[in-house]
Image (tube, rainbow, N blue to C red):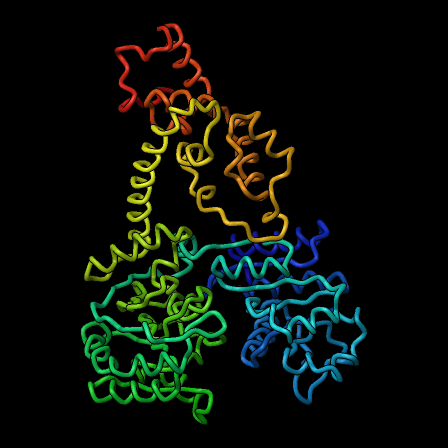
Length: 528
């Protein structure tokens, strides 16, 4: 009997709760290594207990095999298979694993009644918008759908929001590391400048062929740098092309590494992976083969030589080394100075930073460090530095606002005052969130003291209104108190209690609306 971790139990309950509340298509986000297959196995068990028939849908055979094996281990349930010459039609098993490449074919799909499956689980759900997945999901249009993926970037979330109706549960990489379920990550920026200015783009990411040509002149220098960091580590290297991967493997062998290479055409792929797992090789090169469906917890160094603009892909590559393993203290992530005219390139900061502003600051600081730095500590420092910058910019903005004698609090001032990073970094993902705020929302915001003109979507308006309601229940300061006292020079009034602010305002009012001489606003601290 497998005992779910607390976050896994919360994830399971959240998904089932969404379905119970009438949400048909919901999304679950768990970082690589946090047991997403275990979670959806327990969800499937609940569905089978209700008499439902379930389909696990994926695009790779390894994912289907892993899902079937894990389901049997966790729940005792066995699966039928819908792939190639195998069919689940007529099987007495209530769960089927299905290849999207097989099911999407019209002749095969038409054999299934549209209500054949009550529930569909889509593994690696960031693929769900492709034509093949959509053809299968639309055929079984009445089924409840769960999409499971590792942390996607905001672009992914916006796109996934066009299909999924809600995000049932998200467990972040930083939280998983903090809770001790994933390995700490240390990143080091190698001062080797790789020029990507001539690399084209295709389908929203860099062209693999162009990347291979751009990377080729640097392979020897990269191998030299690896000698300083990787000789005592178990390293996986991701490269853009098979020929580049094979060439780099030979270069590493020349420098004394026990290197191996695997690709989709390798006849002995299983044997090589098992030998690497046993420690017979200490470097494994691949051309994007191992991003999904392969686990080796003892990997303690990852090198991404396939630069990407897609955060979910970057997270999958780095995720090959985030699992815990005996004797493993941390994952070392080697990063290089990719020179590009575009700024969308994923770097170690994008594993952990919600704000692009913080990610840019953290990247600058990692480049300046010149040694391995814990990414959690780096993110914390970068976030603090960004807050200082924001406060300086806000102080300038507030001085300009005084001339306008505005009676309402600007949302940015409110967010900074109450130190709400979740509000400051909020980006709408689902359809209703992206819609303009309703007139009722705008009227309520203004009534409560928030200047509503700069709030351009219903999701942000909802979050601010929810926060105002919770603050009122907790007895914290109102927006009008924040505006008045911060206008007098007091700082972070949003963290104060309502009564504290009221008493201070009463003192100022009694002093002719001037701050008493015995109070220094810039150094004033709330006295509870």
